[in-house]
Image (cartoon, rainbow, N blue to C red; front, side, top):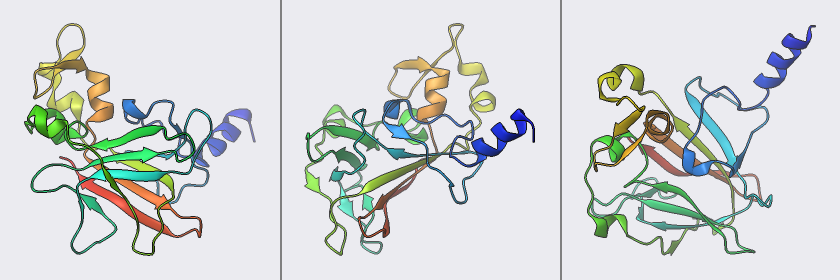
Length: 200
């Protein structure tokens, strides 16, 4: 086996499939070894603080789904807001804001400043009482930005969002995902789906 073949094999053992994830999670995640069913258009990582902490409590704005009662969803037409809290330091990491993240929030839906300024003030707890998790985050990037927005990119490589702000097109690709999933892994090993949002 040559060096190149070994590299390809080793790379396949992690979630490093070449897909770039959300810019707001840069420096806050780590690769996952031996991923199961990783899709070619999926970015998947485990949340990790710069100091190496990997267990979190969760605060949110929204409500729990009526039928799938572990899922956080929006409330009265206002998108969910989800924050991971490292319990020792109290450090908070924004992991999803439905007013800012995903294709629809960036290119389709208008939200007032009052809506955007909602607070994640509910503590998440699974039905079995678990409130501490390792968190796995997946985004799916099925939108063909190069095709859909080719004529909208300016000479400097920026694209205008629905709220009038301009971002680099590469940033738009990374944050304009069409689906998001967040899974919590409890101390017992039980996996709980906490967020599942179609965003395009």
